[in-house]
Length: 365
Image 1: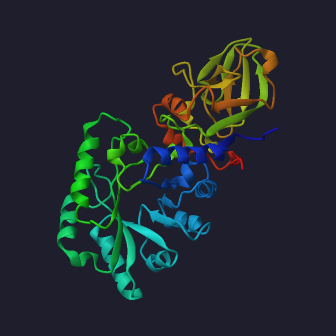
Image 2: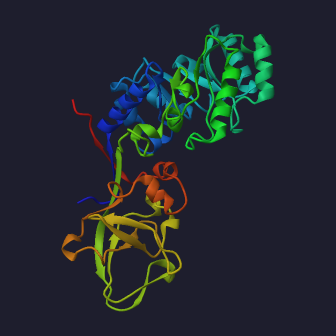
């Protein structure tokens, strides 16, 4: 009997998805973005699997993530999206971790480090092409490309940017960003170029350049064509209850229950990453999971360690303590689940709590 919620990750599917993307992208390198603990699935397990499937370039957000991935293999290229924290430049260089530079101030630090160690430091330059988040803005980029001394001591291996609307294939900003990227990168002829994230890969080969860097697409959880889903999430029933008189359920008495209803208590709550907004009340309904393919509505408020569901429509002989209720799986994707509360699957994946056991299906040899 499983004590708490369980996330099952099929590593074989992840390896297969990488191969599908490699075939789709032809001669373009497929790097792997495994930030946020591999989008909640376990960055180290994903890195090992992807390495075994041929991936040799990884993107993470923080230096700590990069150091953990570096400990696995010496022959990989690891880019840090947020750059290297001040004071850790030499450590990153010695560990062969490549900073992504987003502004002139950070570039100055790298030049000074290169001067101190007497060696050129490989870098990836991030130019903003319209997202207005991080990356060199137009003014700083213009200064950079017209002042060669600003890159003295650094070796520009890659120039990157990031799509704002790649999940909307017809959005005009996709082509606008592509054109801006081409214009910005023409000043770095020898550097490789990368623009496409997961959805960007599917905008066409004109967006691929030298490298694409899918993240969530590797798990197939965003429903992109040709990729398989590698994730399911279940929670165990720890108690069953038949309501013997009309009343309410849960904190705040926000939802009424009627005599004869059958409820199941699941070991799954907001301490596990189940947002409180998944609660139902007499005024809010529609949030649900599945048991034996039958929708089971959430009843009342989500609490720290528990959530109640109505199993009245499930045949009684199919409901038992220890049974696993599907949160994400064959009957609803993580994006379907997220849509119930007006958010996105990325948020829910990265909020899968530490108490959720990760069970891995290994790659078949």
